[in-house]
Length: 127
Image: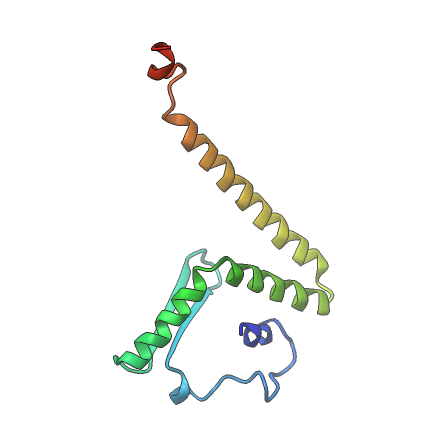
């Protein structure tokens, strides 16, 4: 399903099985990119047409993007490609970043959940 993106990391030309389909066969696409010298993520969304079929294709992409499996599969594809290209140091940096982001998110969620709680709950005072 997502294995077509593996060619992004390959230094070799795409093979027949991984080449992008002709532009007129693509119903919908979502592409994320960052330009040199910028940290802004650019999201490019393309629809073949403003019809039900193209909208359904875009919805399928959006459905998979919100799945944890999509994130995990993407990370796994990055891991496999970087290991194949002997880029373990870069892989370690990426995994370190992902771990730090996850930790920060967990800490923020924990802190936010504790902000609204009083030291002594009113229900405790009635007991």
